[in-house]
Amino acid sequence: RVPGPMLLGKVGDRVTVNFRNDLPEETTVHWHGLRVHAAHDGSNVSQMAIQPGETYTYEFTLTDAGTFWFHPHLTADEQIERGLYAAIVVRGDDEIPADTERMLVLDDVKVESTGKLSETITGLDLMVGRQGNVLLVNGEKLPTLTAPAGGRERWRLLNTANGTFFNVTLPGHTLRVIGWDGGLLPEPYEVDSLVIAPGERYDVLVELAGTEGDTLELQTLYYDRGHELPDLGARPIATITLAAPPESPAPALPARWGEITPLPITADTPRRTFTLSEEEAEGPDDEPRFFINKRAWPDVDPLVVGSDALEIWEVTNDATMDHPFHLHGTFFQVLDQPHLGWKDTVNIPQKSTVRFAVDFDNPGLWMYHCHILEHTERGMMGVLQVGE
Ligand code: C2O
Ligand code: CU
Image (cartoon, rainbow, N blue to C red; front, side, top):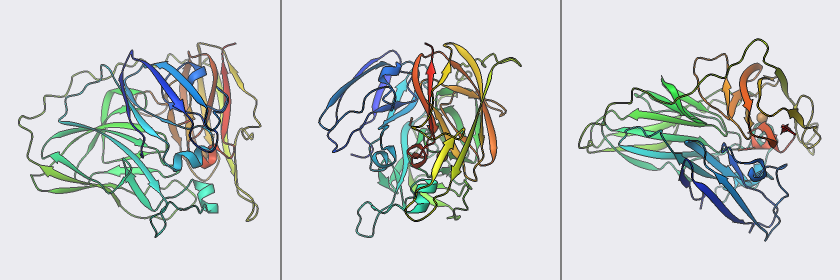
């Protein structure tokens, strides 16, 4: 099924995954956002590829409450596009009173008029990440959700698309953002629409206005992520039908939310700089290439970071398209913006610089890369060694 089965656990659970590769090609499974031991991270550098017919056992302990996901890390542009992904929800001390909680996994697929998944990959698809013509929520096209009128819902939003950015809005409502990739924020904030780059997760509360029988439309709005992609206007992603109001109004919102201490950066905290760049295809048989500091995976040298090193990473996007930057093995705090929270994937808008603080407390070999999967697979990925 697409998405695959959601894993649901709680902080402290020990997880064993007995994996068998029934694909006709090699693969691995990466646990995006989970702070596992490096040997179980399922990236290109943490293990040998799992061959067709082979098995592998992943083991880890769930350390953080939040929304995560798992997916292959080899030929990811194709394997994830074809549906190999699923959400992970880890419960902990982040329970918020709500009438309903939903996991909303967002994706898009390119479908032929026959209903089959298109095998055609255009030059534009390679450049900006495959663009679907059908939007999916939990693997369904335009599903209808039933929700109590006046009720409070908690939505865990995850974007698993190869390259499509969602800009989610529910007209007439504000979305109260309560969590990011790494769990609850200390201070929620409200938005009218929310840009979700590939790989990112956002946890939001919404109070559904209206009366029984009303229909609301969850939409994705145009977001300019570069390369002059056309403005397709507001596109519906799900319909919400309002049912009878909840028996009793939802209890008051908590006075305290997540507890996060800002990382103790100073003027002396070491900085590392990264530049993202791209090179267009030179002819019809050529493919575009994507680089971090002018190097393209697999032709990269590992960066070496001392364990427990606190660093500031400064990522500059030199290209005329956004690139969502993902770091394995730990969370980071994005600087120069108003909210405190933990992230493992952050959008680097075209022609701009994003800085984040990160404390490398998880030794081993890790990867960092753009989460537009066509870019990951065409060079925009690097390796990091934490500790000896
Ligand atoms: Cu979700 Cu290295 O990826
Ligand atoms: Cu990219």
